[in-house]
Image (cartoon, rainbow over all chains, first blue to last red; front, side):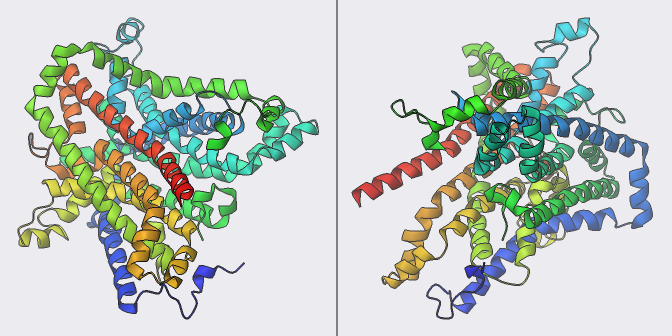
Length: 290
Length: 293
């Protein structure tokens, strides 16, 4: 099909004068360069400003490696949980009608709107040994959640709740239940239906949601900062490690670690663009790019 | 979706059938709800209950605290300013991306999502490096006497960075679906370009602009990572509310932290409510317009 917008008619009544069109384009490009692209450029420029050797040694530092490990550890727990429970919840919401469905959708959106710091504080209120609801119980049983890995994982889970579900619901609604109904009427078991019909239909959307989720999981700062306790080599994630280096005026090392984290973010961004271009038909309509 | 959720007792609902045939409703909803309750609902409930435990006295004491007042004013003010600016720039960028073809358009479209992907702490130190006194941009603005980093301008700038993708990505699809036909019709009926934009295009994309604005505002209000590096963090002047929460926590002033957090949570609820009500509001208005027209 020919995309009409690519070829505006010659006697276009809506065509803005040439000067206006190009100044609008120029203004938009300039704004995006200054506001969005330049920060990325300076991260890379500053990270490598003292050469590859310095960059590499900043990453080889034991605290940096421990932080990288913790970030990957957290992501490795958070991503599968979001994928599994996100798919389950999307299935219930997209395929069935029930009371409170709208309220449930609003609840799923809530972590988008809640400040990460507020999310972190809520976990403190639950798990703080002195002030938390479960404080006495945890102290009595010698379980450490706050200022330890479990709290970091929980905080990241809170922040990343919407990504997979919100991607899958519109996609499943768009696809409709017909294929699944057909599979069932032909005698497929629930598991067969899911593995042979549902999963293949949603796999690209699921991957898309997982990408957004992992970018956020690896970069989360506010919520993790409140609950981590900032113990070097133990409860520092990569973003927290950047903060420490920066506050110690070791800005080259801070930017070196930041460039690593940005590199990870760029990879997810590129994968996302690839998904939109190659498998746009298998994503929810709002993510299709022309 | 709205129509499907309305009860229609007289007619048999076709979806009813699917409920019995499609498997897994109970288990998927049950597990999903458990997950949401443990991860989201339980922590927020803890905050809500602690907030009510403060009592009237506690709340009055907190609300009378000038440092808290200043931080809340700053957070709301900067988030509002940033959301306005992001919406305007977002409108421009979305328009250019949808309507014009030029070299590098795809690249421009791709970098829109960069602030989504870039971790906030990275954005924070990058913006600070750019806009501080001897930064690439800061040296020029400070030469004309405009301090950005470690001042309010810096906070607004960081929040614009965070809010821009929301402002662009909510308007862009609406402009795409609107297409050129309504405008061509208006133009052929003799409307001037300006009138067409004001009377035809703007009302159509307004829900998108407003929901982008609310999202940018909500995110800006709670934003922490990118702001604390560039803000300067001086009490009473450049200390944002989320930062004050962490400070009160470190001082073991749980009541203060809980009070600020509860107010911010309330603001988030209101933003979400607005975002969710907008489509309904506009659908209703359009229907009425159709009836009267």
